[in-house]
Amino acid sequence: MTSQTPDERFPIVFTEGTPVIRIPPRLSVIEAVDFKTTCQSLLEDHEPIQEMILDFSGTMFMDSSGVGALVSTHKAVVSQGGTLILHQVSPPVMAVLSMTSLDKVLNITPASLPENSNQPQPPQRPPETHPSVRSPIKRLIDIVGSLVGLAITGIILIPVAIAIKRDSPGPIFFGQTRCGWLGRHFKMWKFRSMRPDAERLKHQVQNQASGSFFKNTNDFRVTRVGKFLRRTSLDELPQFWNVLKGEMSLVGTRPPTPDEVATYQIPEWQRLDVKPGMTGEWQVSGRSQVRNFEDVIRLDLRYQRNWSLMYDLKLIAKTVWILFQKNSGAY
Image 1 (tube, rainbow, N blue to C red):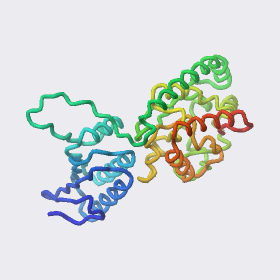
Image 2 (cartoon, one colour):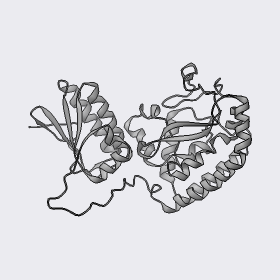
Image 3 (cartoon, rainbow, N blue to C red):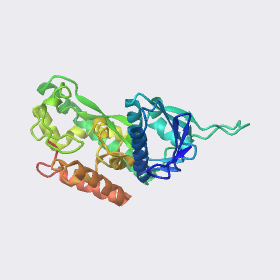
Image 4 (spheres, rainbow, N blue to C red):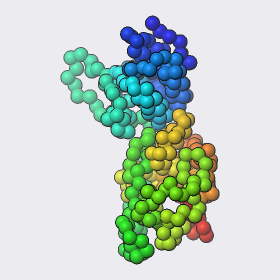
C-alpha cells in the first residue's frame, strides 16, 4: 500500500511493515528539505521503525544538501533503534558516499549490474555541484599559488618554529579536522597559536559568536606569539599544503569543523558545494568582525553566486591588500 507524504516526489510503500521511500532523480537542496520532512513525519506518525529503506535506483545526482539530509535521517532512525538501508544506489551517488566515507557508516546495496555484463565499469566521478569544482584553470592557479606559498612558508619556518617553541611547549604545527567539499573530512594545518591543551579547555571560553561557529576576542588559550601570528595571518601559511593536495582552494568558503556541520539545517549544507578556501568573501569582509553564522552563510552563498576566475583573482588581490592593513588578522 502507498501512503501520502508531505511531498509527492517521495512516495512511501510499506512492505511487511517496512517503509520503502523512493528518492527522486535529483537530491539537491529543495528535494533534500522535503526529504527530511518526509522522513521526520514518517518517524513521528508510526511506531518505532525497525528498518527504513531508501530506494535510490532512479537517483543520479546528489549534492552536499542531499548528504546532509541523509546524515540527519540516519541519526533520527538510529536514535529510535532502527536501521537505515540505501537500496539500489546508482554509481554517481555511490561515488559521493564513498568520497565522504558515508559508505562505511550507512547500510548500502549498490545498483545491480546488467546481466551478462563483463565489461569493466568506468570510475564514477562525484557530481559537479558548482562550476568552480571542476575548473582546470582554477586548479592550476591553486597549484601554482600553493607552491609559491609553500616556498614562502619554508623561508619563515625556522624563525617561526623557534618563536613558537620558546613561547610555549608543544608542537609547531596544529592540525584540526575540518569539513571540505560535500562534507568530506580532512586535516587542516596551521602554525600553532594556542596552548597545547587548547581543545580540552575550549569549554572554559565563552563563545561571542552566534550560531554554528566559535569566536572569542580575548581567548586566554592564545599564546603571545600566537597573537602575532594570527594578527599577521602567518599562522595560516601551512594551509598551502592543503591547497596543493586539493583539499582546499586558494579562494572558497570558510572551512567548518564537524561540530559546526552537525548543527546545520539542510539549506546550510549548500556552503559545502564548493571547496573551502584560505580566503574568500568572509576574509575580505572582515573575518574578525563576522560573528553571526547567518552572515557567514550569506557571504559563502554570495561567493558561489558570483564565482568566476576573475572574481577569484579579485578576492586574492583584496586579501593581499588587507593583510598589510593594521589589525587585519584574526583574534
